Image (cartoon, rainbow, N blue to C red; front, side):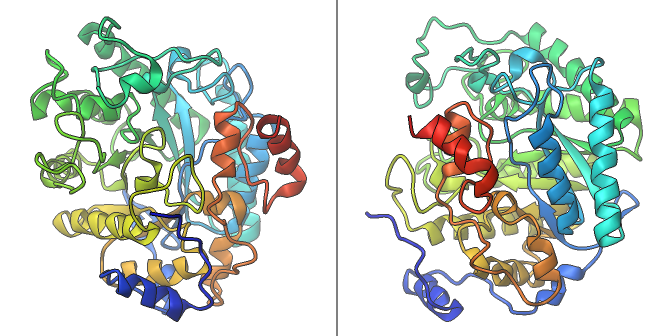
Amino acid sequence: MEFRKFDYKSFEDFQKEAESIGLSLPFSKNLEVFAKKVDINGFTLQNSIAVNPMEGTDGKLDGSPDELTIRRYERFARGGAALVWFEAVSVVPEGRTSPRQLWINKNNVSAYQEICENIMENAQSESGFTPLLIMQLTHSGRFSKPEGKAAPIIAAHNPYLDPRMNIDESYPVISDDELEQLEDKFVEAAILAKQAGFHGVDVKCCHRYLNSELVSAFTRKGKYGETYEGRTRFLMNIVRKIKDRLGSDFIVTSRLNVYDGIPYPYGFGVDKDDYKKPDFTEPIRLVKELYETGVHLINLTMGTPYYNPHVNRPADAAEYVPPEHQVEGINRLVTGIGEIQKAVPDIAVVGTGYSWPREFAAYLGAGVLEQGLATIIGFGRQAFAYPDFPKDILSGKGLDRKKCCIACGKCTEIMRAGGTAGCPVRDAKVYAPIYKQYCMK
């Protein structure tokens, strides 16, 4: 298997390639479908486009947004997406992925209020509406590096992930008492997020960070593991506690992994006999239960960038050659997320996996919306490279290949090297020097 470089001359070439490997992706050139409004808990989104959460690791050491954080969200706000899903913000200092990951606390809530106001003002001045603003609350779990070196906090041992971090069998797992106390830290962070002006929070449960690891903790004993009820307890308790404390007007949601791509019993949403195949039985059950609890918006994803990035982030370059064509990964995301949207039709699902197809992503997203495979189309890496992409979609002219993300992985490479993440290709004036400093030593 070799990397399939994106060298399609036309949309038709791209479509034919997908069909040649037995895939029938939903495409449509009806870009007007993106203008459809979406109601979430009484808040009306003015279109069906989202900026998905992408960490910049560019905060201050005290957890506050810094200059590049503010610049990035100002650009997103002026881009025209009706939903801005603010990146991962840690609820405790020991749960940060880096010394510069954002962390909200009572001493810096005013800084988050300022960035909220900045986002609202820029969106209003450019597009004439206020975007829905969701803060993603997280604990990084086994990927915690608050001082710049690995300091993992694990929910369960995993023979696929442990060796990559030199974690042996004697390494302790987080206790039930600690998890119970941590639930309240998420609630405290949600209270601060509301105080700062966010419309809601995402209790992050994806990419094998702590909450996501718990959902897949089949081998963990105690009230937070083993059974379905135990493995989902942490997530459901936090959601209920936040809703009880802040009421129905404040949106509570989750970015949820529906397929880990890690063999059972160490992966969530996987077929027990063949982990390469999804089994959405439990993910559908969980999404239904979240909806019944009052969660009317959900952001779905798959895989983990630390173990199998080809699953959630198809690319033209990576540390390894993926075992599948990038279009196969996109098809898994589109059809899998679509299966859950169809199973829970009343919840507003944000889809993901739209950066690798470049300008053709607009036609793919339009087809997904037309066929009811998602309610909102979310873009992650694309927003780093091309922050005003929503305007071009909504104008009807579509995406410009010369502005699109080229799926080179350099934004992630900067972050892994300890720098501030952004696009050194399309935003070269700011990020090319950072890339050279951290990645070309």
